Image (cartoon, rainbow, N blue to C red; front, side, top):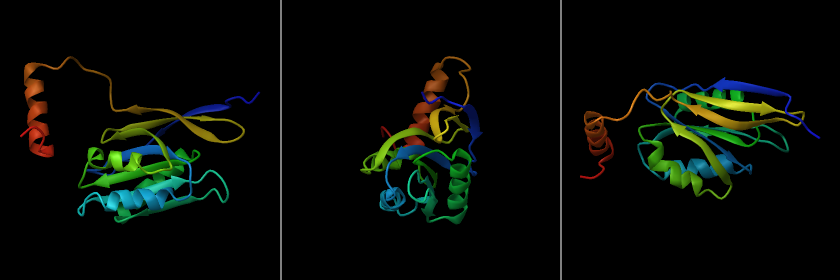
Length: 165
């Protein structure tokens, strides 16, 4: 029976004012389809994509419209180095603006995380390869939301996302 030979934790790199999306796909066309989903979602969105191909040539595929974000997505994918995992880095937009479009890509199997928080990827390894077992997104709780916290949250949603105006 195959066994997990190693567990590890990878700290992702998050450029200033960027958000990260990490997911899993199943086909070489992932980079092209995610690129199309992102570029058609907003004319001001800046992004980089990287994808760990898990069969055939097993290459790291990448693209995007911002070279800093492409380079950072590539570095994150190299660190993760797990089968069919993709990394998207965004600026001038939020995951909420593009996440549904990415999920609608036919080859996308699922999303592990979409955040602006520090993100760690929990990896497991076997003789066959590496896989993502989970993520650590941000920090532990510090308390319970107060009335003032609730008002700040509502204000943020109104100001930044034009929500509930």
